[in-house]
Image (tube, rainbow, N blue to C red; front, side, top):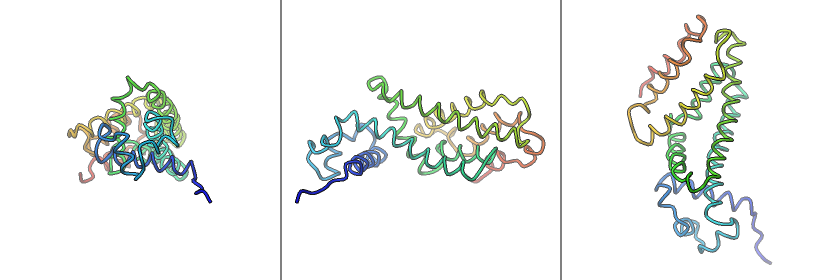
Length: 213
């Protein structure tokens, strides 16, 4: 009997293998031949599941954000307000091994955007979604008395999203700006003027900025 292959599972395996290689060896090193070799198949075998290498790139880029969104959903299911906001930052800034690895791959992909405009469309969709997510946490913080009435939640959500992209670049460049303590210090500087006295007294951002590097 012919072997039954779960097409979706095989596509996912190919994309996950691509991401693993890209994180370890760099995006430019992961050619069609390298990917096929790692999977133990002939190069042509990849195209039973994808229209071409560009589609692999696109699905890999999307998968990075899908993984982040799964983690974010877990945060929002259990936390709210400033606590949720800190959880969002934990899952999007390059603060640990997982998010740092994602930063390397994402920044590498950005270099391909001039030749693969569909990657830019994915980035735009993700940023719009994350903006709504950040805004929700900020609005909760206002409602819970953690941020002052009149806090410009849209502008703060914009600023926090710019931080994500900026710190991913700084992490890849291995600059001191990407140190976790400095990331949290900057977040605290942006949000600090809008914290209520009670929230400021908790010192959430200062505590994170003071954590051992």
